[in-house]
Amino acid sequence: MFLLLQQGRRELVVAAQSFASAPGVAEALRSPDPTVVLQPRAEEARKGAGVDFVVAMNTEGMRYTYPYTYTLEIGKRFVSTIGPALGGPTVVEQAGRSPPAAGKGTAVQAVVPVTDAHDNVVGLVSAGITVKNVAALRMPESPRRPDHRPVSSTTSRQVGADTVECRQRMRRARDRAAHDHM
Image (tube, rainbow, N blue to C red; front, side, top):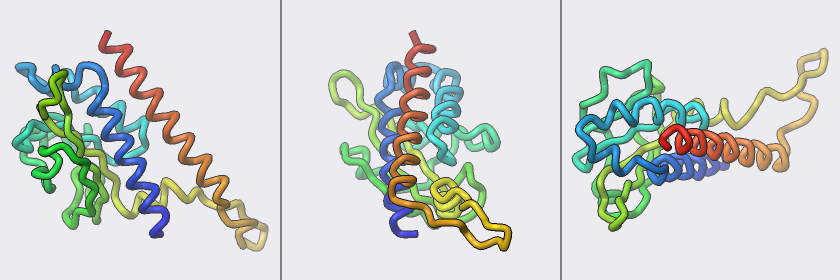
């Protein structure tokens, strides 16, 4: 499980950074209604990356995006540590409260700054996944024999291939979002 969490953390950082650095995100955060621009893009990025949530927020932690199932949370304060990310570094943490999109359990989430052309932090993006879903996403069910015993365990090559596939999905989602923005 530890290795799965480590891999999940890396992928969350990639997902959050990809969305935060996508064309138009910094500008949208400064627009009169950031949710209109960012909500559909965050949802597309969430699905493409295979994470439970991608949340964009202002520098005070007010949410501008939230997974479609829970859109009533838009406008509410993000439940996490945002102070360090406001200073520039990426924060990866395990949050003990129920994460917004997943509904139950503990979440692992990355929080990254969104900067403008002058490197000013204009907002934050968090990508996260519940601990229970880390294993479900990373450990596809093994093939079974007729006696229901696994045929083989997941190899490191398979896990590596899953990581590459996840990065490719995130890249395609980011490219689609950039194309849609143009």
